[in-house]
Length: 590
Image (cartoon, rainbow, N blue to C red; front, side, top):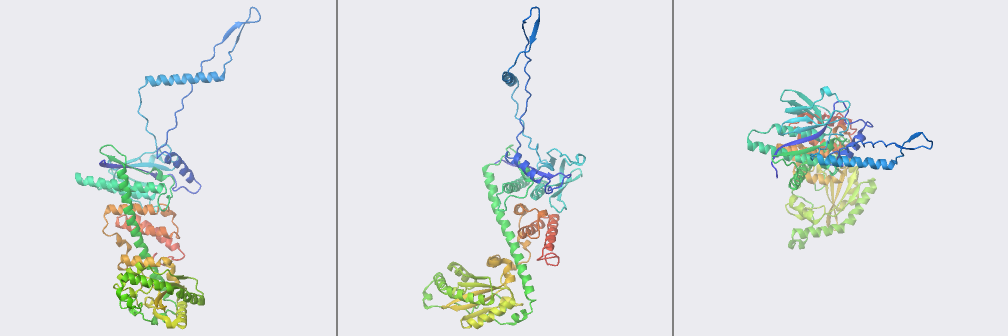
């Protein structure tokens, strides 16, 4: 593998004389088609137009003389020339001249392809050379370009993000004190170029340290280029990004001491493996942001539920076999599965399997009870089963009940969703009157104001019944709580429990301890995640992308890119304020 000594980056930037992205109907699709046709199919290089040589004219035909019909007179007539014969004669002349030129002229080096020949209108191609610390304009000006004020070249001494809403600008400072701002066509171009310049300027004087910095720079830029290629070809889960020709010009070329600038298979494989690791890191960090966001939503919904006029009545109720102020924790669980004599000679795994079989026998009876309750109260959200897997029951017994499988009471389970607290109270009364003798527990503790919620912030009610000598469970969910995660609520609970998210409030704390290069690489993945939705195209209902951008804010803040962090937060606040479900007085916006 060649030793890197620097990197050359090329990318598309906006000509200040043009709007970007182009307004609807003003050449946006033309840019795409032109760039795609001329660049994608030729791997980023435009084929030169064939040289057209003029065809030499044939010599004029000779005049012939002959005897006239009258003595003493002479006449001349033009020779009749066959057009096909004239064309053939012309071709022979051209071929002969070309052959003579080949014999006389020495062989010339092939002329390099001018890949900037057909840059779409409104785009300028700049090149960053990290070896020489230069930024240079490579393409020709456009028809509307202000040539007198056009930034063309600079030896860079400093760079910072610009304070624009589109978040694509870079402010450059030259060694002579000059200043220039260039605006990239793509967000990811701006982030990768700014990081490349930061790495370039941080090279230490020591040989060993400098080589390490250059290697890190090369690895980072290879990852950025690899990610850009995936976006451009639509091979990311989000599909192709919203590009108007800019991404096609993005390139990263390593400069090596040996002069070899090609990526070998080993390098590409290494970049792909590194991307997989960084992608997992981004996914995990984003998931933490999602878990804490949903916990906040649960807290908000519970605060609203407490405003219900009948909530004080619910808050004063005492459950049946309920641990009370211990919240979801129940170390001395009173309601357990029956301990049969044969269990004494069975392993925990065998006991769990036997209890799963008993759950299957009790399931039809539980279905009938749920139908009766739902039908009486007009509930639409009803779910039954499936029976818990014995492996899941065994794991729950080990983690929650000191390895006692008899304390697992949700082998056979169902769920009901009630619309509000009055409906919940009506259901409890109906269940007591209709099925009181078989009810073994009513757990209300997580719905009490002074008690703790479940891990992750969720609150619900549980009723345990004994059917065919087996303890079954009905989970009763309040619709406002249920709407936040739906059927994925258990996944939220499980992840919050696994990653202990209740121990911290700020999701950005998950980034603590990451080194600078890793943070920069995760930013590449964050830009890949939002590639199909630039920040200036974001709407209030794009919840997935809003979460992506919020997670990216944490990366920017940890990475010292405070200008872009503030720009992104301002955009998100505007979107949240415009949302009919949130508005300007919400905790997310003030």
